[in-house]
Length: 464
Image (cartoon, rainbow, N blue to C red; front, side, top):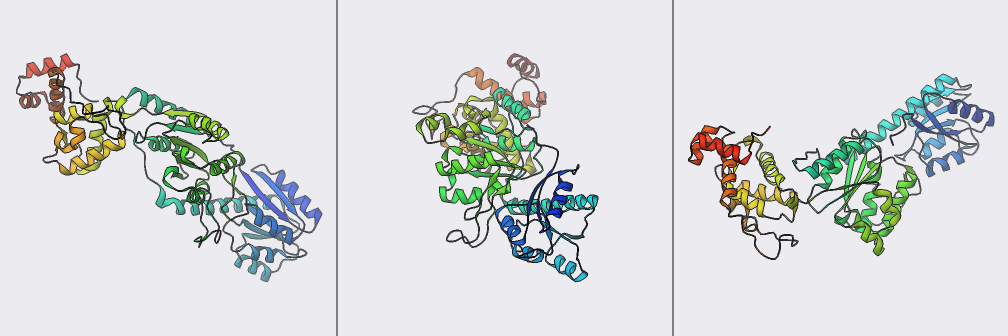
């Protein structure tokens, strides 16, 4: 379901004149350019209480009210970074009063009786100014946390189907759950969902729930107010608030504590949050993408994960296959990582046939992340821009899967079938020479005609 195109502006109207409050509320509710959510109060004390409990885009304050006047209300919220844009409305305005109001940070000053079109235009401009200010603050706060761009390299049919599903669901606001073993690229898929969505101009923020304690996770997600706990020396904006208008990615959501699961569910259902130590309900609009390497349905059965949250986050499930089930991607990814590690020499690196055999025999328990690390290490150790099996490390060179037992109990020797080795040698020679068949035949020590026959026999074709 897409976001509504009609903008919503929350407005507080504070005036001791009931007729004036009714008039302004009627003007706002009948405005055509935006939908206004209007709250009215009769005095300054009620206005200050409302501003401390809720977040408004715009506040229309009468200058002269019982209890606290409009200027005193503005002074009372001067230190609140979530304060609205304030427009003063008065029938007894003076230049001195208007000047003082502007120095306190008021957006504008209008006199009674208010003119309908001017009031609607002012409220619209004030709301836009506040939203731009809030967006700038969010982007500034999360700039150092953003992990950058997205690049998914694959030739595997299952991965391609997953990417096709990403393309279909990304424009919606439905929650997405990405499942798969550690290192399969779940965060890349989350970033692809964000990049292809209508929220791509807004932040994508991420939290690995397994990497932080429960106490810290609450502060990371929801933020905290100054002094809310020992060490809270300043107010902090949480990730949910930073993701307003954008996407929140929760990696390893199965490790989120039960109390935080309840708070996250409430934020999803009410579209509001409350910072740790805060009393104000802050509206938020984010799209949730979650990831897990655990079977959440089993965690629900054991009581370790809330069923209501599980059904809320798994509207669309994307299951990513492990690298050992996509052998065609191993060489493709290895060459891609070589180009990333050595951009100045992109395309000039080669991988020896023995190294190719070893990589295809290895079970890659750490998946794509492990492959990247192995290639980066090999590029540092290798000579003459060629990756050999000895550069890959002992476990990979022997085709031995270690770590999670996916490769069996002991070493798995690379295939010794002559046909397979010959095919790999032909592929390697063609790759090295950029598919110049004469040079490839010379490297292999065979004639051009023999090479041509082997290319046809193995069904090889030039990339692209």
